[in-house]
Length: 342
Image (tube, rainbow, N blue to C red; front, side, top):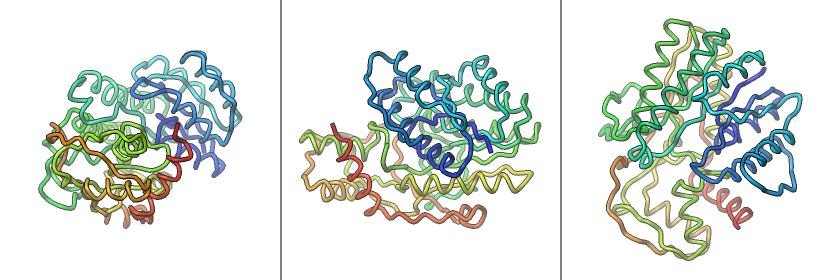
């Protein structure tokens, strides 16, 4: 099978690409190496995902990415330096390859940044996604997986969160773009018979995690003896999900789509294990064997007080069974973090 993966040099995407290649599939990776965080991290992710090492000497972004493309190209893997907002650029890629399925992970991420740049989030997360659906329609691609987010649940008072809950009241622009993707996706499923699964990811962590996300960010600050920006009283809680469990859920969604039609589904992928901020921090301290220093700050606009996934649908429909408990996941993350700390 030939899969097109958007955001395939990012945190989750690079793990998925690695798995698909190991399973004997071909992968087209589209990534724009944006400046949301250091592009050099994505270069390392890419080499790791294709199981290659390189004595890479950095010069400048354009040169480095072109060199990366050259060094990673193979019969079963092609990397494109491409923004999903550029319809014509995407169209050339779709025309060049016979694609069996699109797995769309690329997005502008982050709750707080979306409040500062709402129009940019709309351009990438809504218009960029629609470009992919328009091209799927044009090139007769009938299978599509789209990354959604637990953020769509907003301040839902019903715990745990279930796919049938009303999610019409998002509390951040990022969440609104993800909800819009689910709604617009149904239009393309209904009108053009594109089989589709939207996966609502719950706070993914693990090796290669983005440096702006709390676990990675906190680990770095603790290691450097800095002060952690600690928002609220520590009672906010998340359904932390180890990246290997997320990848397992994506792979099982792929298999389900390949075997069934018509399909339009929204599925939670979480750990169903809720950890509050205080417990998360103490677990990091224990594994790093260092004490954290806190800078206490008020709660931030757009932050959800708690997330908790009901994963019964995922278990029944695709056979999803998360296996990595939080304590073990943090241990694995810290081992990776210490190997890669600079």
